[in-house]
Length: 508
Image 1 (cartoon, one colour):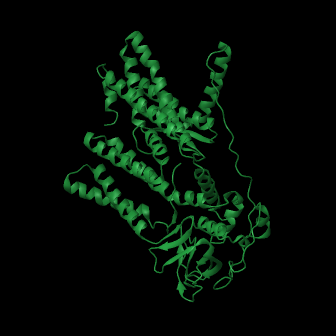
Image 2 (cartoon, helix red, strand yellow; image 1 turned 120 degrees about the vertical axis):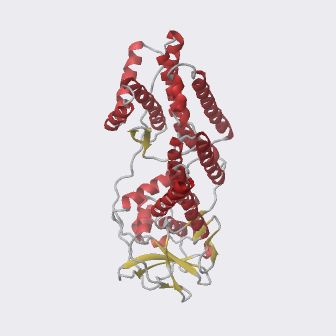
Image 3 (cartoon, one colour; image 1 turned 45 degrees about the horizontal axis):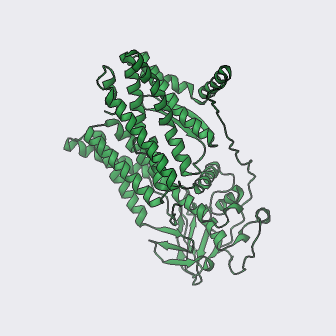
């Protein structure tokens, strides 16, 4: 089983995009002075700015929740208490412009505490009076509703909910009267309970292909599968993408589009087979294609299966022109096979958002989050060094996308770990989370509520992300290695064929 660390809540980053852009511009300027490649210099400048932001986040104010306690680190006043000693107060203060701002105040038996809320982009809040009579700043926290959910369940203070939501729980525990205190600086009115639509249903879209049997039955199933595959793809972007590849020749454009389609439909098939809802297949001119799901992976094995299904399907499809070349010895078939192999080999690079990076994440995170983070960072750094040594300019762009995605994923770890720390997660529905969020700022029915609910659903799915067993890690690891070695041998073995040698320059 993978070991999980505490849930660490931090204030949101301030102007991260602006900082990264300034870092990229500064790096590009230094690159011009030092005669370095502009793309590489801008990437390293943005990486330096991102590192500075990351260090500031790591060493700044943070609220750490574990199985045993809640504590504040890096703040002006120390706070550390075991869950039975935590006291919760819901209150309402004022912003600088005089508008109402709801907040939560958490304190220990010595009345030391801290206040947090979801402030958004509005005016800052005026300090409030804590339980010890001292002035407290209201901290703007990311994932503040999940922190409040942890406090409610682990203290516990179920009485914060109105009767309809209390009745929704399986068992309502007795809440000590001393736990739920009156509100400081005025009691906050209870937020209204929103009426939510039914929870989205995620059924299994099975595409069953039977090998053998009657010829007519097999053809019918193949035809049905082809129709469903075409419906999955975004036809408009596919045509634009095909036109972009056809600047070399229409045959080349058709060959690339066929491989991209088969490769991506391998992902789509795996997603549907494991019960994930597929949003669509999107083609991006000159960059390839991607398949988008509306769900999160529920196991690391599922992540490895979905990630490697694209290269498996694409590599299997590559055997068709390879066989035709072995039969006819026509160079065109060797060229097609080599280009298709190079596309799949590129996707197996161990860097997110490529397939190889997601597979490596599935392996590493099955051991622990720390191992997963280290492997992700090492993979990102190794690929950047490789791109610099071999002058693979395309990889710089992919590395930048991978770094951005890694930052986004790291921001979601807090919510996932908080979900895992909930002792009775099944007792909270979406209505409970909306109520807790409305107790901290945005009212029920606000424009940002659908995004919040979507994030809660995905975090709940990811929180149940079961690690791979050692045998599964070995099996999928051998599959990954065999694919990479086989494709590399194919590209190198066909480099003597006119036209096929150009495929080795795909990454340049």
